Image (cartoon, rainbow, N blue to C red):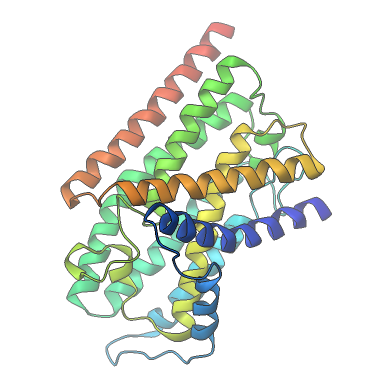
Length: 307
């Protein structure tokens, strides 16, 4: 149980550090000093001291959505282990399916709240988010199904405890699956080239336009949920490459290096690429689906040859 709590604490701490690292790396590559490292934390602290303002056209859905959004992501965090040594707080066979459903629930609540506002701009953002989600979720399921087939288990804790990534074949598969999960994180977390969290032009916004009606502590919950999602995907990717026998300070070192590399890659992509045109985003996500299918077919062939 102590190891499980360590995993949760590390996810929470890294969620704050990832945002700071991304901002600093991005500023460094642009030749600027950038904002303070913990500026996002200060911003959320300010929001949490303010009351929320609600539109006359909104209902209880707008008030409920941020809580359910953050709650679903926190429960999803509790399903993830830290390497093969520290299991998840909650683990059971099939928890990877529940993990996907929890992320889908968090997204659905934001979609519902955006439509509840009655704003045409927020409805436009919800429509785009729904379209990209429909394309991204099959890719995510296929990538996780590939992991399940490799290990023969359907729980994240069991998968990474029995994940032999030291052999050449499985290391290549780890690279393919890790690449797919990394690309999906840009979609799920609304990063460039899919979306841009810094934009204020409603005609090109996706995630940010859906939360225009939120303020105060509700907006703080949404920001915190976004940080946790970044940390969740970082942990998934690191778990693919850390040997299952590594534990203690060595595991923490591996994870710290993985978080730094993950943050640097996101900052690198956001610094040297522009946001896609809307009609290019579908192609981007379908390419991730193709990567997932490739990994799944390779694993299927390996299993067939072993029978």
